[in-house]
Image 1 (cartoon, rainbow, N blue to C red):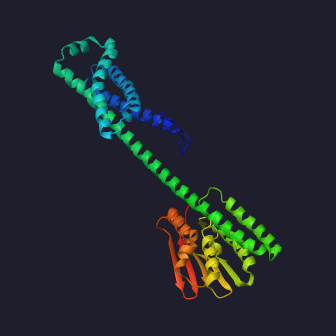
Image 2: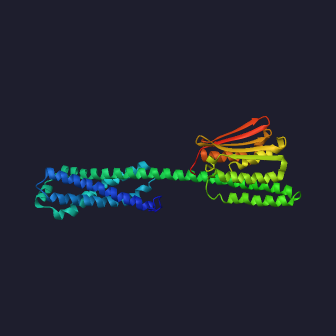
Image 3: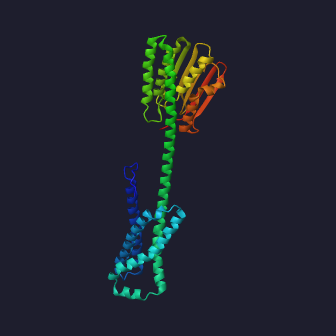
Length: 361
């Protein structure tokens, strides 16, 4: 039996075994008490029946333990549930005959003379009916055991399916995230390269700010989301790099409501949008290029806008490449259909609007 560890700290195998012993003892104690009540009302002149009834169900308890191990190591490995149920039912029917024989073997030395005489007078139909009582008891036990087994299997499969889905989402998220880091590094290095021969001090300052930007990416760790405040800080660093490159040709404003700074967002959610706003705005806008990044709450959702002067053209989707497509894929990956993304293409102005729900990821 494999012993995986569940959230409570108990190995799963031990937890299932403990549940079996508790339920099994309750089941057989119920039948013992039921038999005691029947003896009390129908055979009060034979107090020896109390002891014999106890032996009967104690042997049944022991036999059920053997059946459990037979089920775990043999029957449960049958692929078809229907075949598994049929085989288990057949085993229970055959097992009831062995249980009756085992019970007679164990309890015979304790039979009183009157009981032996009554047993000797049994007809073949009496033996069949008594065996049927053993069979009925064992079939009830088997039905309960099989139902619990099926319930546990369904729950386990659902947990595994959710874990697989979560791993797939996280794997996809990491893949998309790893695409972004080289993308921004490439753009930043291009900015530094443009300044090396023009202003070495600015180029040195850019390298310093770039190291801070890379540190932000390294410090994200394994979390799928981060506080918006950290994202906005990274945007400030990136915009500072670009402003040193374009100087008076670029004006950037950032606005973030204090109430949404702790709102958790996907790392590098806004950075691709800001990067596209600067890159494509420089090609279509009158100078200086105006870029505005705003963040606020709209009900319980986070409302984000990235606006730039300039024009939208159909080639923007192709040239944006990894930016907008990456953002949309990561939003879909984490939020499914719970997010909103829109691009407004007004004359002289392009605006990307995002709305996302709160997440505990």
